[in-house]
Image 1 (cartoon, rainbow, N blue to C red):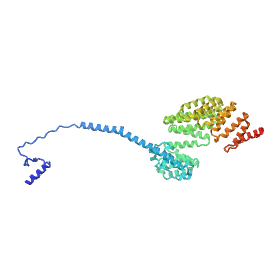
Image 2: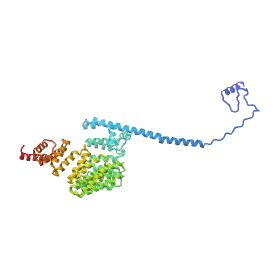
Image 3: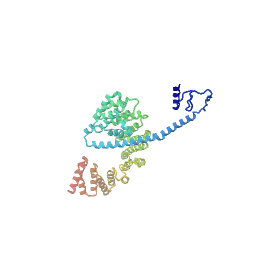
Image 4: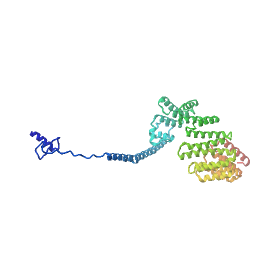
Length: 472
């Protein structure tokens, strides 16, 4: 009994209570006295859980807002920055790699292992549709890498090797390839210069793909353009337009541009096709707006199509000078559209050339002079000075013509057009009775090693004629 009391007191000191027993350190009893009233249980007020639920919901909303407004933007910015850095690094590596292989032979270039940076450049730059971070993941995929390698080989002139590589992969992995349309497109493209019948085989395979894809449509478009007979090409391109008119806007626009080119070619023998060419280019300009491209790209494509219209008018004014005003109006519209872009430069010179081709010498001189003033370092400068010299010659102002033709030669004496300019210079020196200088010009032409047969024959004839009259 004493032992039991000792155990219970020890438990009490340790603040361990047993049900029904009161251990008081000041008292020696271990059992509750019978005369001590039992305590009534106190009833605790019930607490509502609604505030707790509201608090939890509020915390969840705050968490979501933090994620949406803080964490996700921070992560997105970080990834964008990482992508930009990867892009810059890849471009730098690609430039270094290209510089390194530039001194190698084509065979050595092909045998070199393609680095990630070079594959990235192929994926992101040549194909033009991948961001930096995705491109690095993309180049590791078998299908695309094989095709990219083929593209690189074909661009270096090893078309047969590109065909062998891609075709071998297509045969080996046939059932596992997910983008057969892409393989058919490139194989058809490369085989056109090797084996026309095999190219046609891949065109037929592309036609069998249902529903049509952008690659299969592009394969059929390229096949249409490849027809050497102009009438067959026109017929095939019209078929492409009918087949894909409501499916692929970019294929439709390309087909319209190619058809405009075909009509333009046909116009050399049948001038009434020039108007059909213009109408097709104008249709392309309207359809460009359906491609859902950025406005800047729409403008660029529109300018390119408009320049094609201008090129037709350059031909047409030679047959029908009455279209000159219409041609100049189109040039002015193109200049307005291309304002601020690099394309505007060529349009200014095209406008001047149309005046020249129409025989409007005064306006041609004014327009070429204005273009040279606006673009003093233009690649068109030498040609425009030549045209100004010829325009003055046509106005019987031969001395001024000599000045401009001399200026044209000085821009780039090694240019392949210089012998022809020199031939015009000699003719104008003769007309101003500067026969000795004219003879020296013809001799200088004959001392060059870049003259064609016509220039050589004409220089020899004129020189012999002058020698017969004036000696020397």
